[in-house]
Length: 398
Image (cartoon, rainbow, N blue to C red; front, side, top):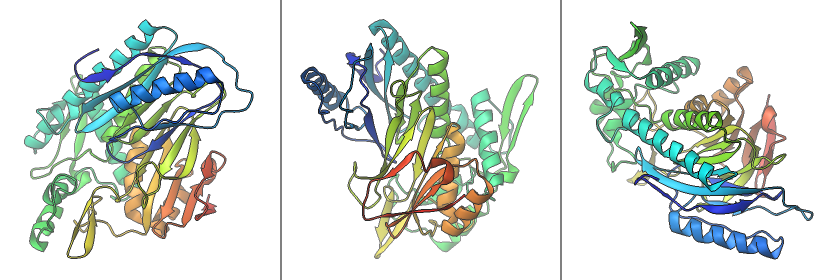
């Protein structure tokens, strides 16, 4: 294993119980396991998992209740790991039938994460940063950056700019979540907004190479799509390498690869925005899906009694005013899900409802600011369980 990854290999016995991942929108800082009420040797195994989780800050998992007639199905090896890249904690668990295969899959994940970090991180010299430094020029990029940029532009068009990949000048002005704690002047905001327009971005291919060109003064910001896109690519690579199931968490963007065990989906807990980390209001049962949430409850600052969230409007240059507390989307296309979460949050409930009604392929769970009302798309209703008894479930999204 490389220097960037911390991992411990442990045997994993398949039972028909599942682990519950609590989805958090930013880096996880702690782990929590609890042992299922099953046979004594399973308690011992779970205790080992507790020790590993505490040592390496593995994904925040909790054992769900086991069916009374749980029977061992097969022996696998489970490798929890974590890696700090692109300014966020990336962690996960891979499974395989032998220690060697499990380590091989984890090593592939480490190499892929480092490759994407070298390609897209804003914290070092990367191709994506080069696009911004050379604004106005055609900059040769990797096929992945070209694909992600084209996807970002499609979502921007689809949402009428509610998702805006060229919002970089506004993000860099506010710096919310990156030490910013002051409100910029109106003049500075207006000047930044003038440089925001996804329609000026050009993506193309010439002589077998891809390029991206942004207009002079623009700054492309992929923070609202990159983790979702990368998670999807990691999942695709794992499956191409023969992995049947795994669980990935890219700074809170959850990727469920395959099923937890045959016939049993992964169960993803949705964070309650007004509660401490690990408190959830509902559970989504998913397989082969990315589960991504947007909300302004983690990254924000307060000034003169007013709270400013990190999701910014491309039209006003200010934090969005919305009646939505959080948006969760489950989709096999992680990049699209990531971008659409931001867009729906920014739209507010009425526009988000109209968008979802017109796009039945987008499956979402929306919690409103009253912390009482939960709206769930039709396709997710059978997979969603509301666990907070103080909330009510509405079924008014087609």
